[in-house]
Length: 186
Image (cartoon, rainbow, N blue to C red; front, side, top):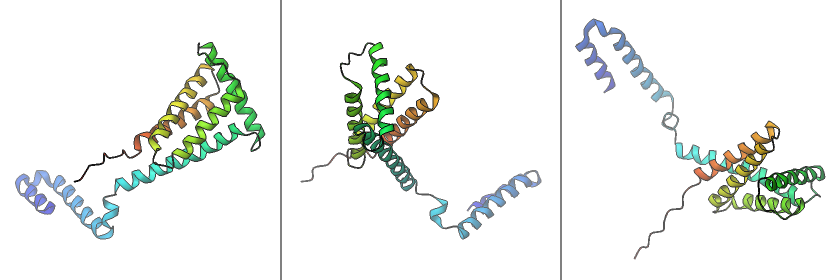
């Protein structure tokens, strides 16, 4: 059908359209050749499978990062230097939040352990059917972390890391399949 259209175009336009005819003919030839050489699945990719694989990679990365950080916030037995860094970082966060007028009456170890428990719980929930809830909580948590890091004038790599994790959490939230309403059949 495409070849016939090219021939009709040549007849109507005459010699002036020789270039467009050859362009059209070369496109038809390339399409026919590619359909012979390449399987149909490569010509028309199944975007649903690609999206699901991409979402799976995002969720896997989030599970690994937040489970590692959550465990390191909860216990000083895994990596003591990381635990100390996270606890001191939480102290700075609490001081910044108190300067902003947020009434917090907790110490840094308790706040760090609470954040670690939330991160670890969300990492586990990402693997269940509660992916949207976990991704929403992580998006809010990392959005707040980005905001606090900007208020503190932290190093750029810390700000970008928090913002990147917030973006990945948001992507996991947006790309997670919506639960379809169950229809009642009689």
